Structures are given as C-alpha cells and as structure tokens.
Length: 293
Length: 258
Image 1 (tube, rainbow over the protein chains, first blue to last red):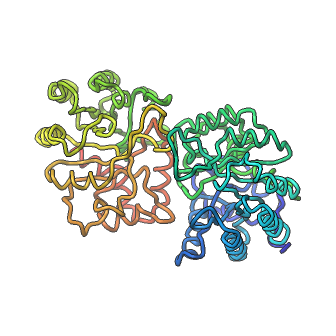
Image 2 (tube, chains in turn yellow, purple):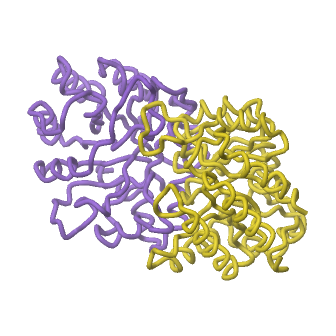
Image 3 (cartoon, rainbow over the protein chains, first blue to last red):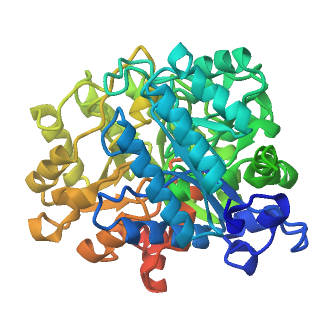
C-alpha cells in the first residue's frame, strides 16, 4: 500500500486543509473549543469524482476540491460511477483506475470507495480486494444494480467484512413507482442485510436524496450496524434532528453527495450540540476507518 | 439586510413543520439575522378552500406586519376567488399572491388563471410561483403533483409583460429561456436562490452573468427548509459585495417598494 494512503486517526488529523483556516462559520463554531491537534477532521462520507469520459473531468474534480476548501471539508470519500448502469466489469474497473489516479493527484483530500456491480460476484470481489489491499481504498460503493438483500450480493458483503471496510449503499424509499431504478434498496432492506451480517458496517446513503426520509430513519432505528449519511439535495427542516433522536448521533455520518451547500448547510442549521455535530462531521467516520488499522 | 422572499406559516398536510407560527418563524429569522420575510399560508396548499389559509395567515401576522409581509394563496379554479382576492387586498393588506397551479389543478394558460394574473397586475401585486413544494421523490402515496415546467413559466412571463413574477423553489433556470438573456424575455421576473447551486456547476454565477445582479433574491423556504444552505450560497458565491447585497435584500426591498 502506498504510504501516503495509509489511513489512521492521526493521519487524518494532521495537515487538514480546513485546519489552516478556510472554514465557514457554522462548521467552525462546532469545533471552536478544540486545539489544532484535537480537532476532528470534517469528512464528507459520500462524494463522487467525475468519470474520465467527460472532457472536463479534471477541472470538475478540481472544483470539488475547491468547494471542499470553501466549506471547510477536509476529506472526501469518493467513488466514480459508470455513466451507464448496470456497470460492466470493465466499466467498474475503469472507474476505480480513474479513482486511483485522482487520489494520486489529491492524496491528502480524497479517500476511495471501490465501486462494483455485485452481479459479477467473482470479478467484483477481486476488484474490491485489489482496490483495498493495493491502493488503500477505504470502502465499497454499491449502487442499484441489485437490491442489497439479493443473495447475489452476499460475496461482496463478505469480502467487505473480511477486509474490514464499510459499504456505502445507494438507497431510497419512494412511494410512487420509480421505473428508473427497479432494484433500488431502501432503509428496510439495509436493516435486514445488517441483521444477516452483524459484522458488516453498512452506510445507508443520502437521507436527503432518497425520498421519504422519515420512513428511512424509522426503518433504521434498530439496525445497530447500519449508519445513515446526511447527504443529498433535500434540506427539509428537522431531518437531522429526527435522525439524531431516532437512529442516534453515533450512527450518523456527514455527507454532501455533491450538493455541497445543502450538505453543509443542514448541519449548520441542525439544532444539535457541538459535541453531537463533531461526531457526525468526522468522529464517527474516523471510527469506521479505524476498523482497517 | 437580509430579506427572505420565501417563507411560510401554518401546516403542511404531509409532514410536520416546526417553527411554523409567527413567533417561531421570527425566532428563526432573528437567529439568522433575517430582517423581513414574505410569508404565505402552507395550509392553503392543500386546503380545498385556500381562503381559510389566508384568514389564518392574516391573524398570525397581525402585530408583526413590520417584519412578516403576507402573500395570499388564491386558487382561480375555486368558487369565489374574486371575492377572496378583494378581501385579501382590502382587508388583509396583502402585497402579492402565491399560486399553486399543479396542486390546485389548473393550468397557468387557463382563462381563469390569466384573469387572476391580469387582476394582480392591475392591483400591483407580486405573483409568486413556487416551482415545487417538496422534492418529487418524497411525495406521499396520495398525491402525484409534478413540478411546474420552467417552459410554462417562460410562456407566462412573456404573455404578461406588465406583471411582476417571483419564482421560488426552482433550479435549472440556466438551461431554460428564463436564465438566458438572449431569449429576450421581459425583465419582469425575479428568481429566488434557495435551490440554485453556487459551487461546482455554479448556476448562481451563470445567472448573475446572464441576467445581472438585479434579478436574484434571497429566500430560505422556512419552515419547510433549513435556513443555512442559502446563506452559505451567498457566503461562497464568487461575486462582488455589491451584487451580494442586492441578492441579500436590496432587490426584494425595491420589488416591494420599501
């Protein structure tokens, strides 16, 4: 594993861009009483870089880093998805190769999720192992190729358990037919998967981008190994507080999913204590990352 | 001075709203340094008789008129809307309308909607149109209300050049005639920024370039929405301070003539 990509709590605490002072007022307030060494980095647990087929992908990646700088986000946990899905084997391999190159461009800022289509079990597991063991990726990203409880997904879940990395799973609960995503998982599916695999660490994606967020929060109340990410463009008042009361602040992870001011703004507005915000903004993700070390 | 052109009081049928009384909203405004707000009834979105919501709003803002400026929700497809409009103007002192064509089951091109907009123009009332109420992915199983296509709004502003339209809860203007100066629409509409990006593809910057600084206005969507996302947009927006001041409140104040 390249040394620059080693993940440790200390590594994440040192040399953060936001610690140098580029920080919006709200996030700064939540850590105002921390010394530089104690300060927890702000980690966006759900971000994406741009696919290399896009002519301006390098410029857009640069803009993402610039946006993170402006908003006080230290680290971005990123995946790259195929433009068309379901992803082919070569398709997800290409995405992960591009992500390795991006991490080399921004070694202090980007952490990688290995994106795979679990329908190709053998190749998907090989790819995850390659990404985590050879390139220091911190997790697995699954999209909507298969509902997460489909037995075909099991080898990928078991590989993530063996490698001690979390799985960020696209999810949504939409009450109307959603033909674009027939195999989308919801919070209930992830809760069931979490019960089947208590050793797994699952992240239910984008509370603010997955339809009925109240449904999702309630579905995850008892799912002790399922985390919930706060990302998405929806900024409904009360969302973060309900999640904190129901799921608990220890299982919430800050994220933007590219809706940058929405992601940060809802955390600034949320009526939670500074300590609760620190957990969500970085401490909880640090603990997940520490599983590897 | 921050002027929020997109605020509400009352209840919404499909989700509990907090801070939805005048006192609650004012506390939120104080916490964020927002001086004044245009408010309308959230309840009137799903009341069959929207005028009941306007009556509740009038009672709620009484005593707070220096900070909470009421807009009336008028449904031109419902009996007696002309009487409701007259009461809202003469007795409630409203400064504009909020229209929900998709929720209230009429088209903006209908004769009755055209008649309402003509009446509002005559009365110097703003016509505020929310492009959506909530994200389409979280609609209740009971309703299937689409967003208003921006193309419909573009036709509307063109056909009523003397009306003044305030578009809230929208995005994607830069891909529509509304966000492109070259389309030569009349300069009779203002765009509220709460859903418009200020980073990455930076639609806000594109709109500033295309429309100039006089046509964008600050709004939060409270109490449906958290107030900080649009505040952050202003903070990170790469634009001169004078432009930001216009968006924060000067444009809205001029629009209201105050």
